[in-house]
Amino acid sequence: MDLLMMPSNCGTLRLVQWPLFLLTSKIMLANDYASDCKDSQKELWHRISKDEYMAYAVKECYYSAERILKSIVDGEGKLWVERLFQYLNESIERDSLLVTINLKKLQLVQSRLTGLTGLLIRDETADRKAGVTKALRELYEVVTHEFLAPNLREEFDTWQLLLRARNDGRLFSNILWPNDLEMKEQVKRLHLLLTVKDSAANIPKNLEAQRRLQFFTNSLFMDMPEAKPVSEMIPFCVFTPYYSETVLYSMSELCVDNEDGISILFYLQKIFPDEWANFLERIGRGESSEEDFKESPSDTLELRFWVSYRGQTLARTVRGMMYYRRALMLQSYLEKRYLGGIEDGYSALEYIDTQGYQLSPDARAQADLKFTYVVSCQIYGQQKQRKAPEAADIALLLQRNEALRVAFIHEEDGVSSDGQAIKEYRSKLVKADIHGKDQEIYSIKLPGNPKLGEGKPENQNHAIIFTRGDAIQTIDMNQDNYLEEAMKVRNLLEEFRGNHGIRYPTILGVREHVFTGSVSSLASFMSKQETSFVTLGQRVLAYLKFECTTGILMSLIGYFI
View (cartoon, rainbow, N blue to C red):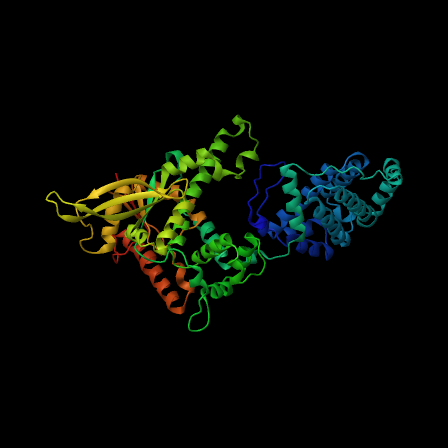
């Protein structure tokens, strides 16, 4: 995760910092270039600068080492560091660096510096401070007696102030541990720059994560409308119809073997090995079997969610759509801190810190004003009455997602005006209360049975009254969403405010990613067919100003004026 983090670039370092995955292994390659160098300083730097990120890595490594060394020592040690970098900087300016230092000893200096940063990235203890003192003295010996030219070596060896400190054991004896946030982050970045050897092409290792990052970064180069602040964006609602499909996989479904002797859990462990390892790390377990999970109800529940998030379930769709709320909370939180920023006493680093944004009352309230998610579960009332597992799973989703609302048709026995027994139908909207129970928000009496023809359209029609906001996004139960894509919803909604021809648009089609393509060869074929019809074909038809659909819900956003 540290390799993918975008630096703030608002610290005191004198250069642009890039995500570390772009700079990994660049220092090792630059060292190889330097060790083999038989040319001048300019020619060496020209060779390094052919790779833009290698040049950034070398600069950051040099400036970070200078700043960190100056900050952790005092007295004679600080004087040595200051004079050392003074000589190095003067040599760089005079193009005489190759005369000042021995490039073949550069890797030895790197190893000593790596040992130092390896201690500094950890918490301060007496033993580690002693270790840092030892590491600094080893670095001093290598730099002074092997790395620098003989004339500079002699100058440092005959420097009386430094000589007395060495003889008395005072050199680097007082360590100023890097405890402030900016310096700790700088030490961590320097250590990773010096040690990580992975290629940028393999970061992240997960192929799905690579696909998502590539798509997101490419999409940022689109011609998008400028996003309004969260407080000024168009409020919208996501709407999903549900009947009786799988909500969450049960433990029995996960562990039962099919005719080939393979269970769902075993299959997912094999096709997502890295994600399975990450899951076990998150819940604090090593290699665990199905029987081990049964000992812990909380771990069992997390396992059910982990598997359900990789299948075609309502839980996966709900998680994906709730990323809208999370994205709006984060953006609202950052906007408030940024706009208040320095006036409210925040430093440049503090107002971009995202820690705690999900607990911010202002951010939560702003997101709830702009986003609602309604799932129309047509027979949820009947499922509750017969205590179906789907009802318990839907109730669990309500408890875990406070912005989620469930609409359903409630049937009850009634008596007509002439005393005859009749069925009464009510359209209800519920949410989870603070105790996890269903709390009724609205109940609307219907004139009769709303199901007249096709069940799915009627399931949507009875619940449409519970949607809120100026725009509605219709999402089917086999669709998903991602946090990075949810970040662009404000830009997307601004399309409704743009004049694209005769009138303002009222329907906006959105690209759909079919996530079931990895299940089988047939599923792969169907996903490509869906991509062709739903995405490519519709983009062509958009120029003709009409929409062609098979009658199923696609990812559409409608705008109501």
